Image 1 (tube, rainbow, N blue to C red):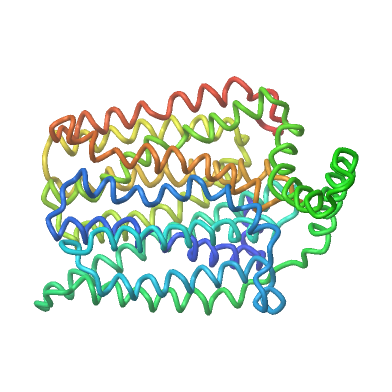
Image 2 (spheres, rainbow, N blue to C red):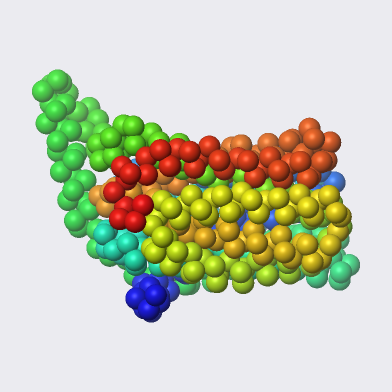
Length: 454
């Protein structure tokens, strides 16, 4: 226990927590802010759900992750490092997009709002590629204890950005609304730009390790592709060089993942990662709409769902890292997955009994406890699976597959509630059952993964 606690005193952990915050905050913008902004202008649940589909880009960012891994941002990379340069560029894009958003109106500019929101989501998904690689590369490849602490710190940082950022955004919106400002969302969105600026300042305090070894390994893979292709097309030097670069950049990371694990285990891993968070995402996408419809105010949502939820998440994320190390990664994933599914039933109880502050608090707290433990174990798990030569690409691939279930399917969550004629209780029961297929995938390969306590 003391060894695990000592891990949190490492300076790298505080840096990881900071970049976790930078990663989590944009989800406030494309999540709570966009959702309530559109709802306040009278858009339907189905429309809000499909507008949230812009976050589907998180599920496909592995398509451009290889280029984030290989291509350097001119000028910035030499001064900040490869990873930090990519993050700073995307933060700048988000900042400009927020300013544009502040001049748009959902009743007349819905298409433009969704398009700019998509730009924010793409920039956020792109910065996450670099942020995840930067986090993993702070820690040794075989240091499971520190990797778990790093995953916990990243999760705490992410939820701090998401929960406290969301609480701040909702409280700011309600304050401006109470002041009688008709365009209170415009001023709220402009206020969020200050957070982006502070994130950029904080990024300057995160160190980045030199990339010489990673670059050398990538070039070696490129040379191997070059030799292979030259035997087939010896007269087309430029095309051969381009194909060799593309092969080493985009194909080799995937091939290494399958070679390292074997086809059967690799496919089962991808199935587990894809399915694990679907139920949580369905609940999360519609939770704010549910709270609003059942009668809770923006301040209630900010205090209970965001503020109280953040306190619980911080504490139990750290405990979750201890649990992951002590129980073993696979066992911790299975147990936390079952607990996460079961707690969704508390929201069914809230839906069936009606507005209750006590039940609301209980549902939020228990849900955040199980989600925190499941998330930190999940992040540790996929962090240990990646090859350090292609950190950004492989982690982005695995994280994107996990995000696919959370975004592509969850975008239809509003449609599901409408199809159930607003029967929120049944909807939450369905979300509880969604985690079970993922646990079957994981349990079937548990003895072939090689984790010590699995």
